[in-house]
Length: 291
Image (cartoon, rainbow, N blue to C red; front, top):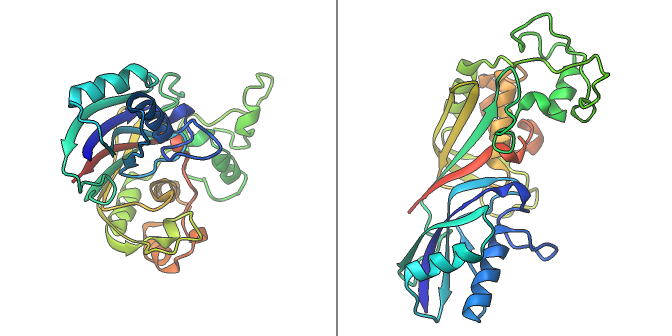
């Protein structure tokens, strides 16, 4: 059998995640397998480096598949890109050792989370960044007194705001605050405490997880760039929703709901409710996989 490694880019906006599901064909894995099976006339199963959630994007997802057909790499790349939707692209194809497995052989993954923190929402980037102020979770925080005393750059802003679903009503007098002021230094301190090998059970949304929840984060950086906050996560593996929960927890540190000193206790608790909220999917990208 011939084993081929694919590097894939995709816009996850309209897909139900990477993994093939019985109730929908709208998954990245499903789309690629369908094209390969129709073309090669044989059962094909592709193995991804990891499962991205619905709405999550990838600049460099890696997968592999085996086939009895002897094909050139340009042949495979041309055929797949001809028949795949335009929001899924194969950027490279390589023939690899028969023992190569995209998930089992991965040594490190790099995820990036992007947050829009400008004074006005970015219209053309809204599918690729999360605007925290436009989430129902932020609405709930604004209803809890004492949590957001230093969050806004303009102290005159009315925090008695409407739900995100109600903000299209132009007659409403309640508007969103123009910009959230995050404590970047506190977030960076919290990020440093998350680095290293830890049991990240508190940052996993799978309550039935039976395998080890110990993972290693080798680096976690946070920076502001042109009204955008960028969080980069590097690690040997990530649990279900782990990056999104880490992001939500760090955002809560940034607005003063949690402190960096809370991180050791959150890790030690090994309970999902100890950590922060699960950030929305659209700001998350799988950037790279290292072998």
